[in-house]
Length: 432
Image 1: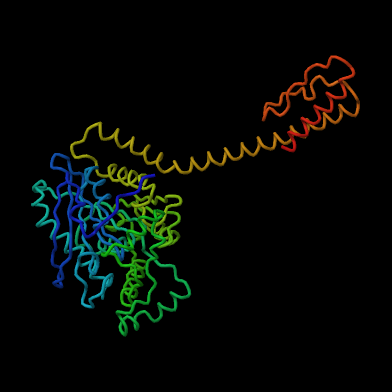
Image 2: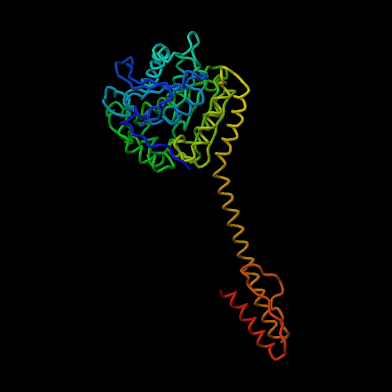
């Protein structure tokens, strides 16, 4: 199983795939803060299917996902991404803290501002077709899914699809969190900078320990507890989404979008059950919730991430076909579906084969032991009755070559010795 390449954020420019068109820099939000962004697009000779805006999770940053961006570009999609306020290479908010914001709405406002800048400044630099703005897909990872949905609901920009990866849309209200929720607002005002809300446990991010170590060592990531203000604002945003009736309105702009949700069955960072609750509420006609068995939170960095990539690519290709058309594209997509199923089921099949082999070995061992006991019993009977034993065991016992044929006895005087010898052979097999 292959793992992704190591990340070194200090050398982020070196990780830009050389064969892709790319831009990076900083833009100013409405509050005057500089936010770091990047844009990667397929070569100009590749037909552009759509553009994917990717929003990272809390404590993370956009430059940890070049392996994802490259896959999307190779499939015919452009990619836009930026470091959220107080994350990665972006400026901090007025409190000067990392992985923190005084208001959740700032994330939504900044995302809308980034898209406006991309359409007016980046698209022309990338020489995208004039007069035809490409379709836009909004994708978020973990905390980025919450920002994504609120951005869509803000109605500032139009979207053509949404992909939610390891969604953090609701929080399981444990006793501790219920107590904290009661005091969330007053604490967020009294001690907004205090990091008192449990954050993401890095050990639960991924099954790949190299990824976990890399995340913790990355100077641009944050693994500390969440601040009181950030926790309160996040809870407020989750409750607002939970109460928003547009999620259940099939005619709303949100529900008219095709939606893909992907999550690992062993995700201990966000709740699979609560993600399912949101999915069932969603009145979208075109929706899918794909759960990957045994995967953790960071799906794109799992040792078996190929199944995730192929499923995502196939889902996108079906909804955003090659603008130049052609039979070849359809055949590729059918092949991708098979690849996705094969990659996802590979581990299950390996485990099933191992179980079958173990069962067969166990059955064979039991059969051997039963045969050995039968051999011993026959030898003892032969001794007791004093009958001639030309072959102490006439049944074929191929297992372990447990008993060899007894050569014919020439005279009665050697019968007893032969019987004893055969008994000893049988007993030696049993005790051996």
